[in-house]
Length: 268
Image 1: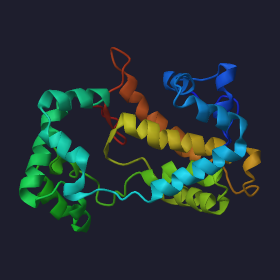
Image 2: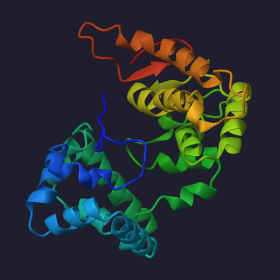
Image 3: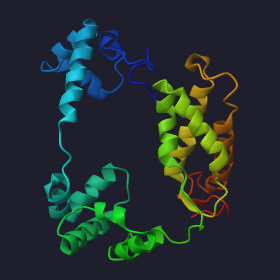
């Protein structure tokens, strides 16, 4: 289930979000707070009536955001806060994020081990290692060892997750040339008939969802894709992936299993 913050022009970047407030169309409680709080109400009223002011301030905000440096290594406040926090606080934060509370001790142990071995809380050094070296390195961290990398097919290249997630953006931004190149690459290279254990939730919302949304955009005549270049390749891939998910939903409760093997249809 999904909902738009702006129900009037959900596919257009404009100031309609602010114009919806006096119409009673604010969706979330946090939206109502914006117009009720005297500190933010003047901005809501300004942006609702002044299209130019909204875009001017939005542009300035993006410029300021681009000047912020990314904190890494020893400088990251969040990393040190997690390491110093008691287990109960970490568990509460993880529960709010929707993850299992049993991960709390694993996270703290990993951070402590990383700080002890490398002197900083950063895993960027893994980028320069081979797969075997990564397996060896991760074996030092209890809970995220080589089991995350083993038992993969020799020529397995992943699910092109980044490319799938960027498909809709390419169409929305009008870069139809790159979109068509991506679709062509998918039709020749992407296959879900692989002996791999996949997280059902992540693969469902990111890969299946990405393929379906990109297909909907690709078949929208307003996007002006070259006539005849798109032949439902994304929909075909999405249907294939969806059918591979079905065994995971065959449970006594109706709630799906967390993991599924896309080739063997085995669930975990």
